[in-house]
Image (tube, rainbow, N blue to C red; front, side, top):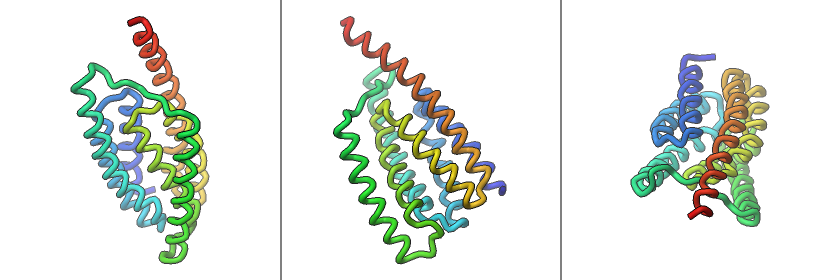
Length: 193
């Protein structure tokens, strides 16, 4: 456990907490966490995760821009839904991209677990994109991915980060319950007009 890992964990928890609250400051806080984790994962030869954190920085800037633009138009940011067939298409293409990424990591680097690393990175990118769209479905998706992350980080002896991802599972459940409640209120408001 290093100081870098401790600070990364703290920034990540704050970022997810702000995301649950639909607070626009989740994006800059997460940007800092992404940068810190990029360095940490590089040090542990988790190159897929390192690249993921770098791409997260770009997606974080995009998400921040989208939320900021939409926040000006609405008093609160609306929660949206993504339909089942669209979810299947997104996940299928993401996993195909993850396989190609895993092949690249396996062939061109000394990544310790290239295919798992690549699949988790690819799925995390998809869910982060969904976050920018504020889909309710992000939370169950994060639960599944975070469970696998916990096991991977324990395998890599990153126990504090594994604990963080365990906490992310709980936060994702809380996020889902809070966003679902807000979505139901939002739907009642729409139907009452």
